[in-house]
Amino acid sequence: MKGVVFTEFMEMVEDRFSLEIAERLIEESNLASRGIYTSVGTYDHQEMVTLVTNLSAFVGMPVPDLLHEFGRHLFKQFVIKFPEFFEKIQSTFDFLPQVESYVHLEVKKLYPDAELPTFSCAFPSPDRLDMTYRSIRNLPDLAEGLILGCTEHFGETLEIKRETLPGDPPGVLFSIISAKE
Amino acid sequence: MSDDLVLLRRRLEREKLARRQAEQIAEEKSRAIYVKSRELEEALAAESRMKNEVELLLNALEAFTSRLEISEIAEHLHRFLIQVIPRQYLKLYLRMEDHFQVLSLRENTTEGGIPVVGEEAAPLGKWASFVELKGPQVIQRGVEEKEGEIHGLQAESASLLVLPLSAPGHPLGFITIESPQPGSFTKDHIRFAQALANEAAVALENALLFREVKRLSLTDPLTGLNNRRSFDHSARQMVGVAIRHQRPLSVLMLDIDFFKKVNDTYGHAVGDQVLTGMAQVCRQSIRSTDLLARFGGEEFSLLFPETPEDDARPLAERLRQAISALVFEAAGQTFSITASLGISECSGEGDSLESLLERSDAALYQAKKAGRNRTVLWGTITPGPAADYPGS
Image 1 (cartoon, each protein chain N blue to C red):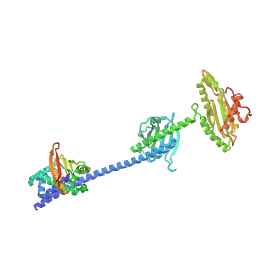
Image 2 (cartoon, rainbow over the protein chains, first blue to last red):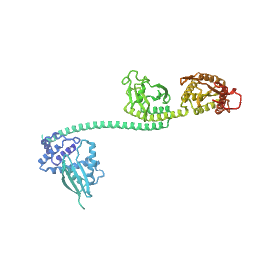
Image 3 (cartoon, each protein chain N blue to C red):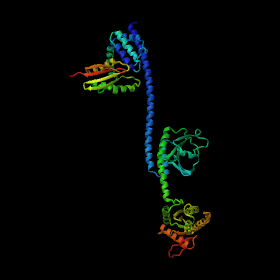
Image 4 (cartoon, helix red, strand yellow):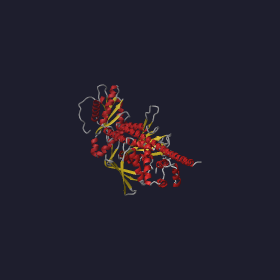
């Protein structure tokens, strides 16, 4: 998993909770990396699972809620870090289909070893985007948080429905529906 | 120390380590980028080289197509090769029936880059095997070269590139390129040189065919002498020059006596032998500036420039005697032949080749009439009624 996800996660822990919790989290998680993350590095994604699980226990928040929140935080940071991906993009429906066809392509150029999730998109109707998420990391809550972050960025209120699909790894179908005016 | 300070210190320590890690990763990345950029640079250079080569090849192709002279094609080949392989010495070996025709070209630094062309015949010798070469071959002096194996390698040459010259279907010969630097032929050089050689081969084949057609159209196939057409062409020019410069010139007509009898007695194959033998004697008897042709049938014509009738006469007599000294063998018998000769001299302004031939023919008629096996000068005969002489 790319280092930027870890550094952003730790930032979020410090900001949202406290420096103390962040330190405790690292100390008690017994990480191979010892919690020394840099955005340009690559780390075992299992460390993220450990961190989220432990954080959930420390702060008494369910894991899915934490991942939602992290997803929203991460999206905000992506907008700041990679403004070029958002040029001429006006809405969630503009942006999300680009993730697979453009963003991930560019990420692959920078990090040929990155193992990225797939987001295949379809528009069954003009007001509905079906996005199928599949990842060997299987973090659909994080994906949902990112989608939420995206709608918030564009100031939209969209309904997000979620349905688990069979397969290995299992997929999750997000149906993003714009409310009828 | 307060708890917060301890936390901050720990965090700072982690940050430091993270920074070091990031620096290391950045270092590795930038090194990888550097390597990649070098690769790209090289690829780009190779591509631009290739583009140049393609352009050169296209220009070469254009230059080759319009050439029918072998030396011109060789010059073009050298001109294009030198743009890729500098300081080279080029030799073109064209396989003839029993020898190589060799053209040598070398950059001429004193005369504005015009290559020096040397042309010579060389025995097939050890080079012969190179004709069958299927692809380019590099020979380094002292490495692949066995002692004394490479004939004619320049003293200053350290490596030799041999390229087969092959037209579709059959080998024409090969090209050798010598370079003063050992190991100076790169893969790209060789590839380009071979591509150029292939283009040259097509042009060379055309030139060889053209030369052959030209030769055939001007040569009598049996004797290898000029035919009447080529005699007329050259003789007309020579007569023109003689008249313009008021120089003497003589024309001789020669006819074998009773040639029909040779054919009837011994057959046409023997007749052909007689003609071939005759041609050989004639060829040996004339001077290098004289013109000789089989005029038709058993008739031969000769033209002596810078030669008045009186000086042509001893030449003719010597020739007549040489002919009568020839001995042929057929059907277990030996026989010899004689010939009659007529000579006329160019009379200057108003004279023509046609008229000269007519007068020589009249003199020849007189020689026949007077008993054959003799030479008659047109200037010595008295005008009389023209009549055919029987039996030839």
